[in-house]
Amino acid sequence: MSASTAQPGNTTKAVPAAAEVFTRAFFAGREPRSEAYRAGVLDTLRHRLEGVSFPAALHPAGSAERDAYFAGADEGRALATAAKEAAA
Image 1 (cartoon, helix red, strand yellow):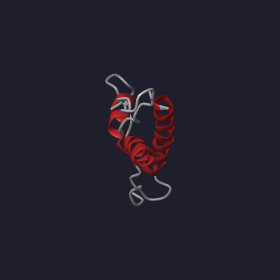
Image 2 (cartoon, one colour; image 1 turned 90 degrees about the vertical axis):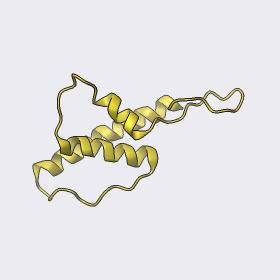
Image 3 (cartoon, helix red, strand yellow; image 1 turned 120 degrees about the vertical axis):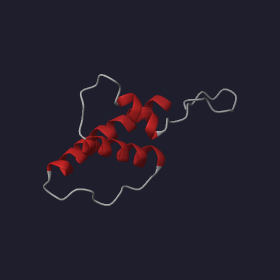
Image 4 (cartoon, helix red, strand yellow; image 1 turned 30 degrees about the vertical axis):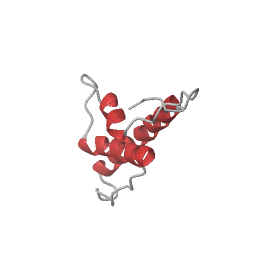
């Protein structure tokens, strides 16, 4: 999903889809992460790259799952920023 636009002389690439960035980030052989962490990454990528709203709170405040979700969101923000910069 990184095709150039159709206008002559314009080499701006399209920003890749959230699922594509997520799949590249969680390659085979990467250290495993929890489901909550991966959900935080993917939800943040969808929000930043595709404008999808975040889901309602999935985990109770103070839980390890909530902490993992927001740690994943931090990675998601970094991945989304890198994807946008690479497409610019």
